[in-house]
Amino acid sequence: MQSLYPRRKTKQIYIRNIPIGGDGPVSIQSMCTTDTRNVEETLTQIRTLAVAGCQIVRVAVPDNEAAEALPIIVKESLIPVVADIHFDWRLAIKAIEAGVDGLRLNPGNIGRKERVQEVVAAARERVIPIRVGVNAGSLEKDKAEKFPDDTPRAMVESALYHVSILESLGYDQIKISLKASDVMTMIAAYRLMADKCDYPFHLGVTEAGPPGSGSVKSSIGIGTLLAEGIGDTIRVSLTADPVKEVELGKQILRALGLRKDGLNLISCPTCGRIATKNFEEWVQRVERELDSLDLPITVAVMGCVVNGPGESEHADIGVSFGGLGPDGVPVGILVKKGNILRKLPEDQLIPALIEEAKLLAKEKQHQTA
Image 1 (cartoon, rainbow, N blue to C red):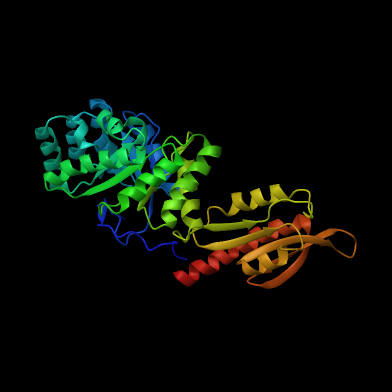
Image 2 (cartoon, rainbow, N blue to C red; image 1 turned 30 degrees about the vertical axis):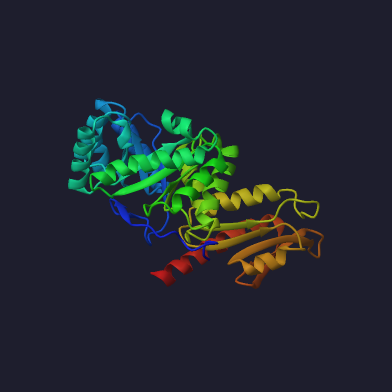
């Protein structure tokens, strides 16, 4: 499966060993919610995020104590670490010296040109990419006043200003983000910026909210741009455990065919034809027990005989509830690769599906080994 449009051509940078842009796959990022000064707590959260599928993690560096914690965090982190710096150029220098893999820093916000030159010199020596990050909610006053009725244009103008500072110093290890809490503003800003430079983009709907509404906003904003071929790395921003950000990020990429690993669960919407009272619980059990599969496998859980058999046959493995056995007990069919394996009472159907799905995943693992 391909995106609706050809992928935007960009230069490629690396965050440690993760390619961003060019022909590299779209990567998933998140940000620690821990106090960076608490090294063990921060590393514990990074490990949890890495296991969940996070590929790049950002940590806040608000003061010297946080900067002093970075060497151990970077050394022991399973994934690349990006330091989030605001205003203080000295913290950026300390972060680079600590070995961070990237900076989130707007050069126009750290003062005199000499300070920017010093940061760029240190970044250049270690080839540390710098993310220019613009947020609609914190635009420079002059940009907001210049385009009072066109926030996307003001955001792009701000990003180009910060980028021009780095370019004037001969530095091009850059990626750009143009985030807004309003989905359409965010989409418009990235579209506008797409043909103004060839730097890779980090996508996100900032301050999207709690998991419910935030997931909808993020899926629409990030998903729309990725479908158009725009975007090289993503972060879903939720008011929740950051593991949920990573999980949703993976789901967005899988839905667009940009990520091939893991479970693709197909289940029908509930309606009056559902042939079992516990259908939602069955689906949740399948997702819970099979979500850890790291190979591409499509599983269908269908609730009636109308669409159930067909969807089950098109999946790698599936079940379809509906029908009665000779003794009047509700039954369903278990289907693997288009073939009916057996007909089972409904209370045995989901356990059999889970067992067969795990066996199928092992088969695929041996085939790819």
